[in-house]
Length: 94
Image (cartoon, rainbow, N blue to C red; front, side, top):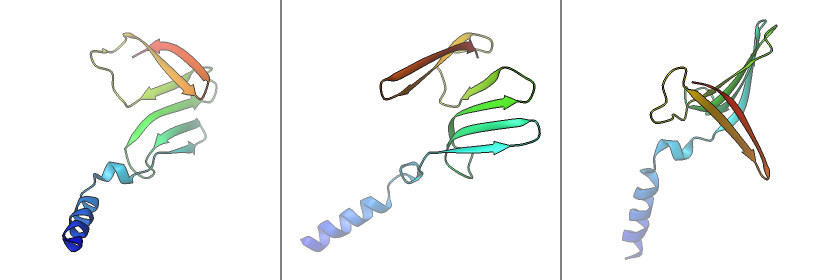
């Protein structure tokens, strides 16, 4: 009985989705033109959000890769960032 349960548990653990094993982290990239801060899985295209600053431009490009149902290009949009008790909203467009 124990072997059967152990084998079933081991099989279930090896079948977990790869996403559960991928840890999201903050990473930065920099160039002569500016810098980007990304929250995602290192060395993959799997990212949740990024912030890009270009030299000489006072604006920050915030890109959310989570998706928003029904949002179209140039629609009004906002990004809400929350850390503990701190909450900040940024208005923009899609």
